[in-house]
Amino acid sequence: MKNQRVPRSSQPSMHINQTDESLFIHNRMKVIAFSYIVIALSVGALSSCSSSEQADTNRKKTGNSKQATKPSYRIATVSQQRVGQTIQLPGEFRPYQEVSIYPKADGFVDKVLVDRGSAVRKGQVLMVLDAPEVEERLVAARSNTLKAEALLVASREHYRRLKASSKIPGSVSALDLETAYARMKADSASVLGEQANYRALARLKSYLTVRAPFDGFITERNVHPGALVGSGAKMDRPMLVLQQQNRLRLVADIPEAYSVGMREGETIAFTVSAIPGKEFKGKISRRSGSMNQQFRSETVEIDVDNTSRRLRPGMFAEIMLSAEGTPGALAVPNTAVITSTERQYVIKVQDGRAQYVEVKQGQKSGDMTEVFGNLRPDDKIIVNAREDIREGVAVL
Image (cartoon, rainbow, N blue to C red; front, side, top):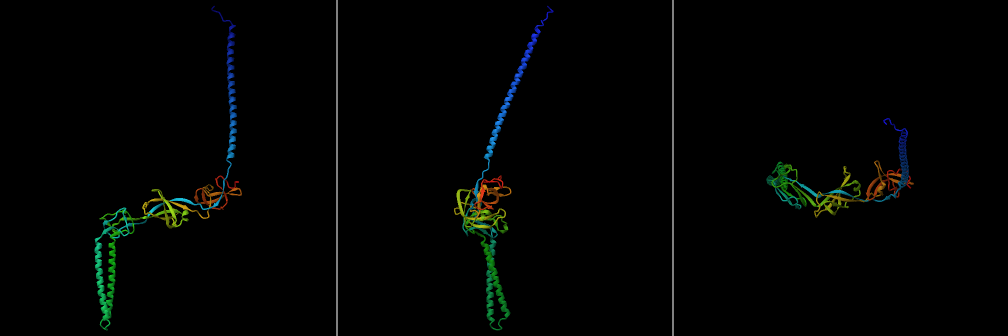
């Protein structure tokens, strides 16, 4: 029993079972690999089909876009007309008259009869200065004048009597007569000098009473009673500032391109930002007649009635200037002008082809602009001009 062996016939049977199992696994793996290959080929075929369809679609789109971007030109005719333009320019109101009142004589301020905002009339007393030494000098000048006049009366009478006596031969010498005449002339000159001195001191005294030179309003007051005023006081500011405000000057700088067509007496409309919704009018009264070298503009003054005093000196205004355009100028649509870094030009249609024509722009109004160049009325130009339109290309 101990040496009992397994029968040999049972071992081949086990080997056959193991071999069948290996073959089964091997065949299974081949089937799986084949399935993967089939799936990969199917996906590749589908991808190639979709790619070809996408390429066909792209070709169709490209062909359609090329047909859509075929250039089209809009043609217009050059016209001869004035291109009017309305522009807005800034302006500033200034008083029609303005004066800074300084003292004409040295003295102390005695009375100040007006203040800031006071309305005054021409000749009205504004201030009174006190200078006692002026009064004393005036009295002395009056006394000297009376003394000189008395001496003149005496010398004139003395000469008259000597001249009457000289008719009797030998009674009066010729030398005495000439001396008396010279004395009379000297006294006459002395009287004239003393009278002139008296008048000067009287005028100086009148300067102590400060009067308004014209109707207006006091806009500044810088002194009070007791202050020392005069040229010797080295005043940095005036005693009073007087402005005429019932009439104003609207000052504006007009560019040279528009100043040529302006006329004196022309009515100008303007608005003031501080008074919205209100339009004012004035007339061009004065022009400088020369161009500002820095801004290339001409200074123009417009007189504005301001009886109601709604406007104030120093306010800013917006002037609405209507330019009539340049006589004889040619006009084209704004889009017809091409501006590059080197030049300005329009594209003219000559014998069905594009031709560049250099121009200079003038005034603009709406969608039209003035041009100056080698153009004539009724010439054909491209309205929708672009820089990529080459010269000589067929247009029509």
